[in-house]
Image (cartoon, rainbow over all chains, first blue to last red; front, side, top):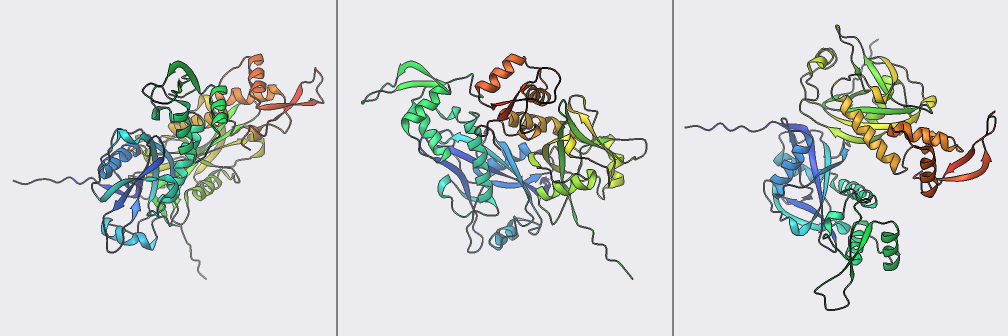
Amino acid sequence: MSYICLTPMINPNISVDCVVFGFDGQNLNVLLIEQKDVGQLRRFALPGDHLEEDENLDQAADRVLKELTNLKGLYLKQCGAFGDPNRVKNIKDLPWLQSNRSDPEARVITIAYYALVKMEDFNPSASSFAARVFWHDVNNIPELAFDHSEIVQEALMVLRRELAELRVGHELLPEKFTLSQMQALYEAILNASFDKRNFRKKALNDKWVLPLEEKQIGVLHKPARLYTWNKSRVAI
Amino acid sequence: MSYICLTPMINPNISVDCVVFGFDGQNLNVLLIEQKDVGQLRRFALPGDHLEEDENLDQAADRVLKELTNLKGLYLKQCGAFGDPNRVKNIKDLPWLQSNRSDPEARVITIAYYALVKMEDFNPSASSFAARVFWHDVNNIPELAFDHSEIVQEALMVLRRELAELRVGHELLPEKFTLSQMQALYEAILNASFDKRNFRKKALNDKWVLPLEEKQIGVLHKPARLYTWNKSRVAI
């Protein structure tokens, strides 16, 4: 009895990389992998890999994220193509490329994807060439392989712009929330600190949220009023 | 005496395509080329070509646009990567691919760029494999090669979103303009028709523009008030 092993053809010039941002109610994190040990070097990186010849770019992003971190069902969106001729030429990345790529010298253009999730809804676990997968504070990211630091910064810019336009973020809070919870979300993503009164004024004057005739329950101290997103302003 | 001809290496899997939108004061147009005749087929397409191995993606977009249309100095921005496995497999595109590509079967992922210009400022002229270059109304585009129709639609969506956020468009009007000129710009890009009073109210209430103490000069009929962009709202 014999098995036919169909290894999909991979495209040596194209990859996808996924920037998954996670919010835990307080801080914004990004999902990183640690590459499997090659020699002395242990490099951190975004979950990413080459495109297979029979899939499109969106399918590749979903598959690669699943293969390395076991996450699936995320809403991944493109946030840019990165094509510097030297982006995979760093000497520190060479051992890994030599161990993992049939053509370690090949030029690779990568298409970056990003997503924003509630961390509590997803439980990543490492597989394939990821030795470890972990969330890391976006404000203090360690050195990453290839041009992945630049990709994270670009994705963060896109995310901040989407937040300013109320296109993302609303799904990270419960259906009914306090303005303090909302402020924590904005402060985490924008890496900023707002005056509480000014933030409230802005959120209410610009009609981002609508007040409810309800207050927090189950809190010992003074319960705060609850709000909901203004669905005519938010791109849900 | 001999010449050394250094032909740059091209990447068979990556191309760039440019969607150049042009505004003439009334209508929104897109810049198209007609591919040089191959057999019976004459195909229209976006100006686009393969990436050279020593350039990055932005450089490729600038170079390719220059080579095919002689336009330069445009502010080209990425608006998406297109990687359907069948995007260059249409039988109608085969003759051109066979005449122009060393590997006509190769899968090609393209990075799309877009720009918005005043048509009067640019004078395109065809060269390289473009037999002709011309502006065409975006609302009535002929059949295009490859997936270029889809790319135009995607670029148009990005452009409309940028306009709604006041990130583009301001440079298409003179320093001082009438609200009618502004409305023509918005109607052309959004392919919409607005009530004149409602449009004025929106533009003034949302402080997109500021009124000047000046009126049109050199018009025979009732001169209209002039306005200028509100620089604190517009991303200039």
